[in-house]
Length: 334
Image (cartoon, rainbow, N blue to C red):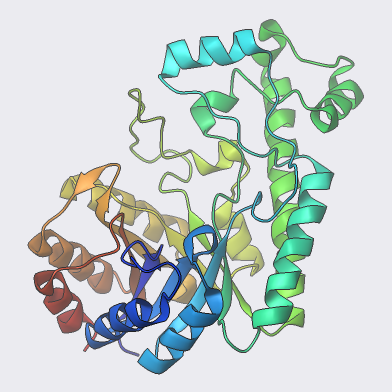
C-alpha cells in the first residue's frame, strides 16, 4: 500500500465566509494533487460541512470530522477549582486551564448525543469521526489540582471519605493511583461508547493522541505545559489500541528538534510492536513548538516511512502549504 499522508485542517484559508465552497475546492484540489489522501476538519471552524464534504469529494479526498468532548455541548461542566488554586496554578506553570471534566457523566452523555447527530447526518459523506482532546486537562496541572466538580466530589466521597483530597492526601501513592484509575476509566467509557456509535453508522473512529504517552522526553517549561504524559490525563491510547477501539491513532509528534522527533517515534514503535496499521505519526509543519522547512518535513516523512508505519498526519497552524512543501508530500505519496 502507498504511503498515506493526511492533514489536520481548520479552513483558515477561506476568506469568503458566506460562500466558502470555491476556496475550499481550490485548497483541497491542491492538496489532492500533492498526494494528500484525507483531511481531518476541525468542526468549530469548518464554516459549512456540506460545502466541505462536496469539495473533498470533488477532489477525491476522504473527510474525518474532528470533534472534542465539549463540542456542541450546552453548558458542559468544566474542571472546577477555587480561584486561589487557579491563581497558584498560573503562578507555578504560567497558565490556567479549565477544560470540560472527563469524569462527569453529564458531559459524556451530551457529547455522545452530539456526535451521534453528526454521524447520522453525515454518514456516507465523512469517513470517520476524529476525537481531539479526548482526555482531561494537561498532566502537569492535574497532579496537584484535581477537579472539584459535583461528580468528582461524589467519587472522592466514595473512595476517599472526603469531598476534596488535601495536599497531604495527594502525596499518597494509593490516592494518586485511584485518581488515575478514575480518570482513565471515565475517558475510556467515552471512547468505548463512541466506538459502538460509529460502528452503528458504519464510520471509522480515529484520534489525535498526546505525543508523550508515558515517559517520553517532554517540555515542561512555562508557558509550554507539557505534551502529556497521556496516561496521567486519562488518555491511555496504547491500551485503546490493544483493545481495538480505534481505526486510527495519530500521535502529535510536532518536535522541531529532529533528534527529539526520532526519539518520540522510537517510543511509538516500542509501545505498538504489532498491528501498526492504525498508527500514523503526526508532523508539525508549523505549530506552537515552531516551524520546520520542506527539507525537515522530508526527513520526518522518511523516518516514518522507514519505520514501517502506514503514513503521517500533517499539522500546519496556517493550513497553507507552499509549492515546496507540496512537492515533498507528492514525492512520498507516490
